[in-house]
Image (tube, rainbow, N blue to C red; front, top):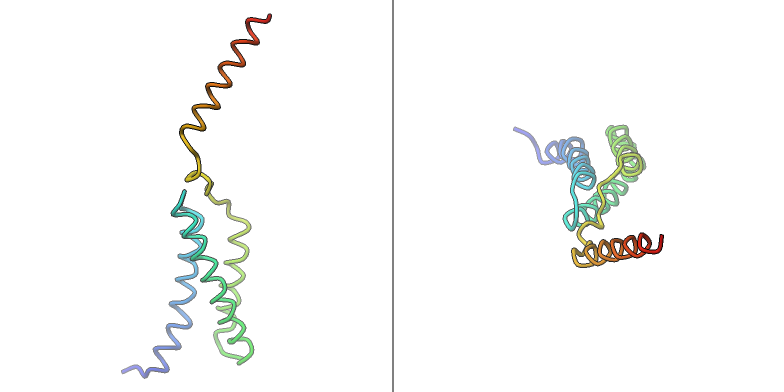
Length: 114
């Protein structure tokens, strides 16, 4: 049977990097209001992973390479992978309708002038 120390070590080596990767995936693949929540969760996972990586490197733990790679992947993934527009939730249908009405009105008056 596994001791509590072995369980914590497995969780530290396997569970935390996988959950950070899932947080990155959700932050990049969701849209609208859900994307904002996913980005906040990703930021929280990024802070936690940074602290865990610092602890691992300072203590010369054997999982330092896994943690450093995970942290680097999270940072590069957040910058390199394009995310969906999070402002979709802010788009007001009325505002869009007013803009299209104004565009139609200005094109109509410009045609009448020529």
